[in-house]
Amino acid sequence: MALAEDAASVLEEFVQNVANLPAEIAHLLEEIHAKDRVVQECRTDAASRDASIQKFLKTNGARQLNPKEEPYSKAILSNYEKAQLYQDEKIALSDRATLLLDRQIKRLDIKIRDLQNEGAIAIDPQLPSLLNNNSNNTLNSRLPPLLTSTTGTSIPLHPVSGNTA
Image 1 (tube, rainbow, N blue to C red):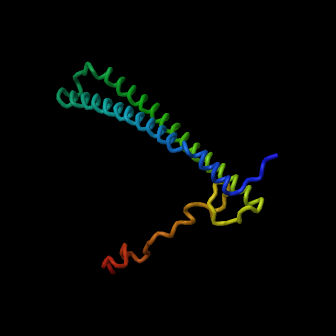
Image 2 (cartoon, rainbow, N blue to C red):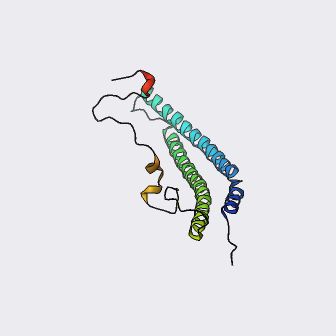
Image 3 (cartoon, helix red, strand yellow):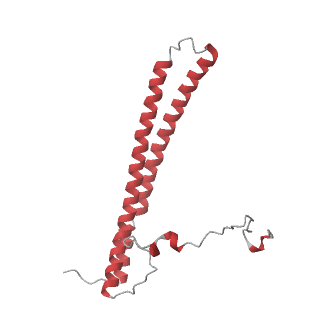
């Protein structure tokens, strides 16, 4: 049988669980950055080889066969395929980082829900949660509406800015 938890112990456990999270996320972001550099190198190499082919065409015309066109074209395609593989790996790493964050937040949400069900803390409908799918808990519902004008006139950014219509 599980011991009843109070809000302080839930919070302490959450803080301990996420203590290493910034380092893990930073490591994943470093890996993404390293892969991004390789992707950029692939693109630069492909662009360089393409420019070489284009330069040959400009100087010699399309009728003269470029001896380097076939190997350059293969290298360009190879660079783009390599870049695509690294892009897919970057997506997987970012998904992993998202999963790490979501897992910790969901654990906290479950603990908070359990505490609310036990009556240890009050139920707050404004409390954001990943477990609730209703529109009251989304971030966009808590943001103030954008200042827009339907008349076509501009609205000053700040009332004291002096930009009056």
